[in-house]
Amino acid sequence: MKTILSLIALLILVGECATAADRPNVLLIAVDDLNDWVGCLGGHLQTRTPNIDQLAARSVLFSNAHCQGTMCNPSRISLLWGQRPSSTGFYDNHYHVSKEPEFLKAHVSLPAHFAASGYKTLTAGKVFHGGATLRKHFHVVGPRPGQWLKGRDKKTHDKPKGWHGTWDFGPQDYDESKFTDHVVATWVTEQLGNKHDKPFFFAFGFYRPHVPFFPPRRVYDSFRNVQLPRVDENDWNDIPDAARKVSMSNRKIPTHDWMRENGRWEQAVHAYLACVRWTDEQLGRVLDALDNGPHAENTIVVLFSDHGYHLGEKHRWSKFSLWERTTHVPLIISVPDGVKGRTGKPVELLSIYPTLIDLCGLPANPRLEGVSLRPLLEDPKADWEHVAISTLGQNNHAVRDERWRYIRYADGGKELYDHHTDPNEWNNLASESPTPSHAKVIARLKNYLPRNNAPQRGQ
Image (cartoon, rainbow, N blue to C red; front, side):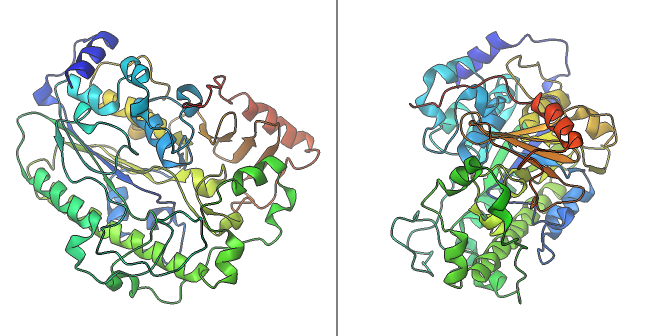
């Protein structure tokens, strides 16, 4: 922690700002692999997320928010260090930030920034993807994340050889208090009930609905006659070869054909919905503890997911794409005595870091590439000239504005979708010779593509 503190002291100039005692607390809540299947975003008619919806009702809901990397590691590094994958070079899950000491010396993480500014920093569950020494970023470390609890979670399906070990789904029958996210939520509620001698920055993460989709049986059995996502059988007829290669590159996850042919599609969707509901229940426990505790009136709450998730849409499972279902994420920000509302302006998770230090009156970090969302938090209808950019691998990017999604691959392949008329992204308007109006849209959005093209870390 001392090294990080000295680094940020060199990076930022301490200006005239409020004393530490006057600053608000921050509760930063990550949910792993949660797409827009939440009630307030309307992604699935059968989803039940009353606690997320209640939080959104007292906050600003960013209904057009997008991640910067479409898998855990690049997304979380981008958010926590405030730079795009095309600048950091972290493009996949296999190379962790702890392997890059020079990067860590030159950059300051979001929790370290708050620690250097006089905050007490706490964490539990999954915030970093992996490989981070948490004690370098947080003063207090609670329960660590667990993909499953050995000896408790039981597999429910056999799967082809070579699939990732986490790929399974189905109800579990052991004591609900022993589930990983229940353990994390319990520890978080205890901390929120305590008084602290400093304002706190508290980042914690729920693991579900990440695979394996293992909800408690009680929650699983509460869903009946599950509705499947809509799929166009000819969806891939107009996408470029690069899109096919990217979408088929991960051989450790199921194909949509396998899920259908083996009768697993409905079961997997059922289990995912139940995991979302289970996580929402744990969130409710945390929000109740905050509302009934000593920090209810002076805590900023931010809830986000690190990326979205396909459950058959566009013939895809998991993440690892540049389509809407993967990049689109829940993002909710509640500011004490702040504006409540909803905005469809395109925003990025990259903005969480600059937004929080702006709201808390902390010194700026000149290395951040995101922009503060404060204008939209004060007026959800404010003018907004920014777009959201997502990246998958070196030089593959998607640009999203209020209406359009433009995808550009490293080999020059491209896609364009009009979300006013085609929210499922079934009709690639850039598949052949685009119309003059579509060519104009492509030319405009192409200007937003990142200029940086950092090489892959670890190669």
